[in-house]
Length: 132
Image: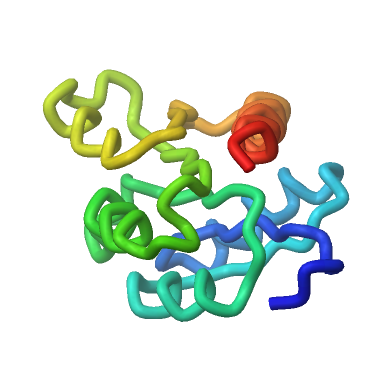
């Protein structure tokens, strides 16, 4: 990972169409958007990228987004990387509590509004910058 390269945003979602839609929403941020379709791919990506934030879709039944986040947090180099979870409105509070595996963390309800997602990712990336 080059120190001079701009930090990327990792989008974790099993669906190619969903990753593409999220990438398009985040495009105006001017950051490189990296996709991962599984926990394994996400862990590989975090080892290769300098990340400003990670967006994880928790709605996908084929991917346990909270477990993926926990595994990312286990790594010393990504334990404080902000994670933004895409969640279903009215998601069970116990389930959402699983997300607090180390903070900073935030939630964006679905259906996802592009401006809300961009603002949330920008804010969490700013928090990351203040933690360094």
